[in-house]
Each structure stands twice: as structure tokens, then as C-alpha cells.
Length: 134
Image (cartoon, rainbow, N blue to C red; front, side, top):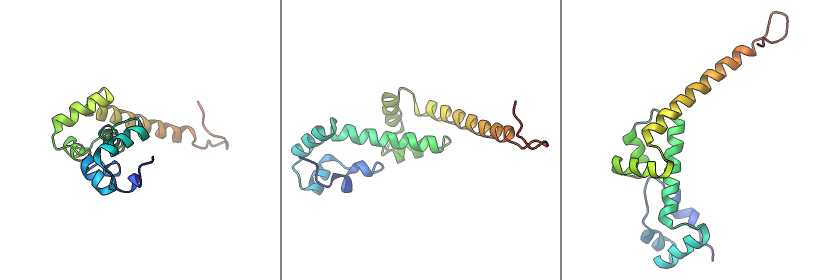
């Protein structure tokens, strides 16, 4: 059996506001235990595990987009109210702390900017009509 309309209304699409499985079951008009079994059958994960993955993928995307994002803001965006709990769970998921990941993304972004700058330099037209290459 497929989860009826679960993509339309569940917490998976709302990573900043966790929706307990009980509320999701009520929204979907499916008994809680049956919904839990359906999630596991359809995804191979519990609803909580899937929600957690989605929340942390969102946190990862936010850091990738803005490595300077405030850790408190990131914690709230990921649906956590406690920064220590968020950081601990982030490390369990990714193997590094959010602060370390932010620093790595800042370094990677700086390298991309530098690479793009050099790429433009090497593609500058030469006075003889070709392009400069080294």
C-alpha cells in the first residue's frame, strides 16, 4: 500500500516545523502504528529517521549556500531549539561538527571564486586575436 498523499501534507516538506507522527497520522486519517509501518515499508526508514535526514539535508544546503550563517539561526532552521543537541546530531549524521562544515564550505567557496577569477584571466583575448594560455 502506498502512503496516500503523504508528500502533500507531511513534515517531510516542512523541515523547520517538525510534525509528530501522531499529528501526521491524524492529517492522513491513518492509524499511527499503520502509518509507521507504511513509512518503513515504503522508505526502509522510520518516519522520524526520514524526517531527520531531510532536516539535516536542509541544514547542509543552508551552509553550502551561506557558510557564514549563524549557528543559532541554522539550529532553528533545522527544527531544533537546542544548539548543543543540533550540533551533536549533525556530527552523528555527517561525521563533523556544523562549525567545521561551515569552515570547509567557506574554504571551498573561496577556492571556487579564485578559480573563476583565474579562469577569466586565462580566457582574456590576446592582442594577436587568440586567447592567453599558460
